Length: 86
Image 1: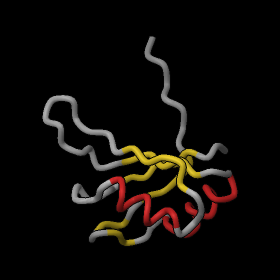
Image 2 (image 1 turned 90 degrees about the vertical axis):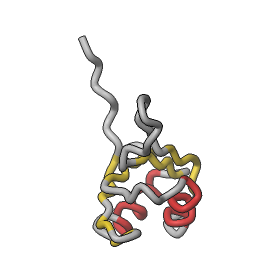
Image 3 (image 1 turned 45 degrees about the vertical axis):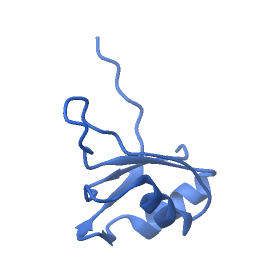
């Protein structure tokens, strides 16, 4: 497993700062990215969070997967590499 996590079912109100503070409880956060729709600029409801170590990433999954955040039960798991389109 790598240190990058996929975070799904996010409220559209959450910001990168909100997520960084939430995940900092489990360890050092290296980066947070919330993708937006190219057309509308609206958040897409998921994010990627990179932790500084695999142990911290595993702790974040353990602590946050299924947690209620801003009225939604978030999903946190290891990020899978994007499949190449042929």
